[in-house]
Image 1 (tube, rainbow, N blue to C red):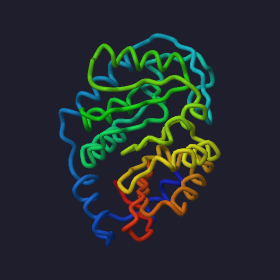
Image 2: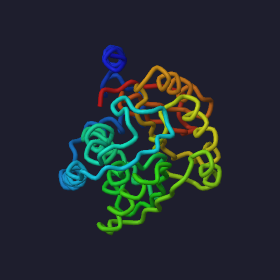
Image 3: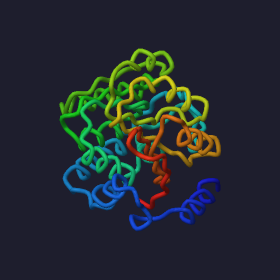
Length: 256
């Protein structure tokens, strides 16, 4: 119910490229968001998701985040996770397009799960060096094993608690960070503050599920109003954040 109400509000507030007066954002919308996906990368991603949806292995999921809206038990089939809690096709298309457009070379992903987001990022830029962190041992193991079978690219799979690992990465310079690990306001804002030393003028932050709950919507409000943030885009399923000092502070609600 919350998502439906939020989506109605989003549609009422959103615009397309014709409501955008920032040249940087106009190019992003017209040259990236509104461009059709190049089919091969998305089809490769779709085949990977289908292989996970056919995996009936039961694993024990350790959920360190805000919990699940779908599952009541920690014992879950891989197929069910891929179907109900994994990345959707529309979100994968969007992430692939963003990575193709910006071509980040150093990427940090907070929340690997089964590796669907990791794979989308890789397909957007096969030369990117990706570090992906996961707190659940068994989903981490599946994502890592599948990646090693494919031998697709340079990915560092890190297992551990985000709050212990992220401080060790804050002095790195990340071109793109994908926040997809803990859907709570306190945790999301905490990760943001820890990683602020890693930003450059060209850094892109992608926040997943910004309308997942009232708590995440409150987190998104705090994120876009942060003094370091200059440009933010609400695409409903994700939020984009930029730190470009040459840009006037402005927030956009865009129908992707």
